[in-house]
Length: 74
Image (tube, rainbow, N blue to C red; front, side):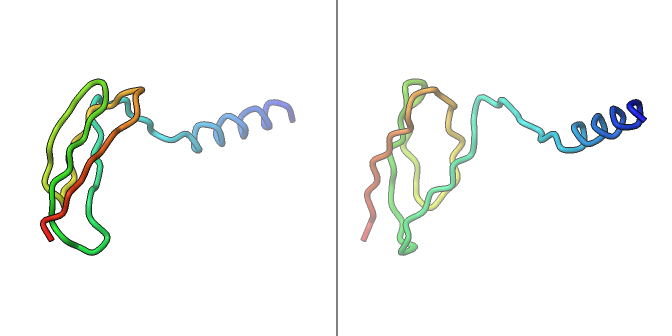
């Protein structure tokens, strides 16, 4: 009986695991709520970039916050 419980618990714990990746860069989807176009300056302590909006740039992971400053063309 104990053996069956351990097997069942093992199967359930393996089946419920999620796949977590530690990629250096992660995609961030950016858009303005009104659908307009523009430019955003993104920065953290590992990277700084300027990207067109709407887009999905790859942003370097950091333990620092992601700062953004965006302007619209309208």
